[in-house]
Image: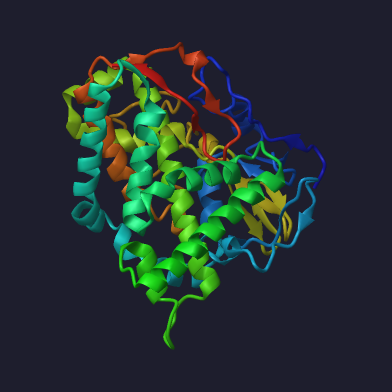
Length: 404
């Protein structure tokens, strides 16, 4: 599968950092399923259209299992049997995936989030906005809001000490930065594994009942245990790093987007009831997972006219699919009144993001409160000078200097 191989487009226009790499437009029209070398050194197929991409996520012949991973040299090797990352439900197929996911689903329904988490989100957002009002007029929004809010929420949800936030955030950054050497990324992964392992032991020792992690511990003990110890640690690690990194990236990027789209921002201030639709449009428009999500073919099949062989890696470039004009009218325009039945901002199919309702609650709280409290909020630097995260698994802003 080396014929006509191209490198996955990753370079964005500094003058238009909210748009995916420009090459996706041509690929989507002319080569919607193309042979690609990915940034981690692996090769496979990349899908850039919405219909074909959604088919990848729903085709049972494409597995979410992780039979191989990348090395610094780009070679293929078997995953380590002691890695809890390979034990999580993210890398399971049905029916196992659904069985393990149901262990957590009740805590992440819209009703549960509204009843148990929304009052806490309201409280901490108001407290952070008060701190901004009392601080300097120019400040870093990432440091002031988009990092601490998701960290506080996931700590509250899991029962993790907020005092440990710097450690697990730094480890997450290392783990998810595709621009760093494999050994650095592995170091971040092992820090998270060791941290959750220690936290589980501490909760067992103290008999703590706080948070989802304590609930999972109960499901990993006794004759009726539903989780192995390895799966317990894997779920804890997954929830911790995914629960704060993705929302932090989305919160910073959404704020930057509204600051550079004056009419949409004014419309939201005047009509806060549009916030639900606004968040869905921002998820579609921005699509922070910038390198895509992959599946592996378990047999020969065809996707969009391309002949996929058993064992081939197939990656959906969701940021390209979410800008597909076949699925969305005028897709490169941010339209907070857009009516759409589906998008890939939270993934797609049975593996769609478990915590999406928590992320929605945070965004639906922060964005209207922020701009109602500070209607004159503006960028303190030109757009092209805002430092973006071009190498992280999730696209975002590293620092967002604003003036209130």
